Image 1 (cartoon, rainbow, N blue to C red):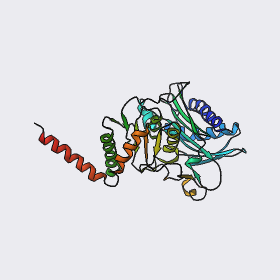
Image 2 (cartoon, one colour; image 1 turned 180 degrees about the vertical axis):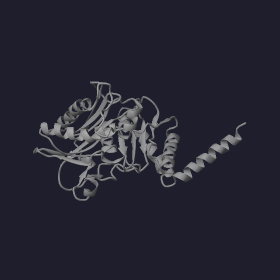
Image 3 (cartoon, one colour; image 1 turned 45 degrees about the vertical axis):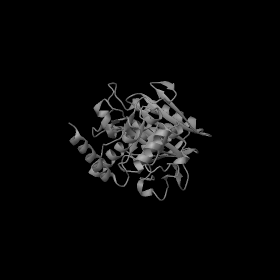
Length: 319
């Protein structure tokens, strides 16, 4: 099956599965324990596997809610990384984006790298937008479906916006590092505003449209990164003309996301893939941001102390 056909199947599956897990009032149905988050995570991967099987696609699905499930009753087989309910906290607020992240890779023995990707889908259920990418001979084809209508990714920057997620920062160092990276980018670009609504994959993929100018993830959190959050969005951004790499500028292409034996203890995936990311809508912004972050990494605390001292000195000189 061609990559664009697989992408179309993912989109169709999302349109069928999500409504079936909802009540008419828009709330996700509860599972037996009354947990609405688990209701999505327990059932979505299973229904996706069944849907793909019904369309002659076999899949090993590795997801955040259910680590690994095999739906391999077909000759044509793939490996899917899935977050079936990203942004569950956002969902409960009723105002912020939440949705599903999927990346598709070939099913084979040995290492599977990010560059082997076949298809990717990010569905922002709150705003009714689906971002997808299909592998092509010249790299990738990206499409955006907004409330049922197909449109091209916006190549115009709509605002000077930096997305710096801060949720799940249990340790001060993680928070300080993120603020240091934000300040270094703000200084480099000059005119920016900060936002954090903590729905990693969904807000990261906005970079392809320009509604998010820069996205930086430097918390180094295994739970939030990896093959089901950062990698699907990075695939779409790079295929759509933006750029997404590790914070040190290393492309994701050579990162291993799957090795049947080496990562067996982790359910088959590499928890270190996509631990951090710098993504920009424009290459010119990326070069500025990468240089800014490179000068700060390893001395984040020192950098922040200097910034505070500068601010204090400025205030002291003010009349």
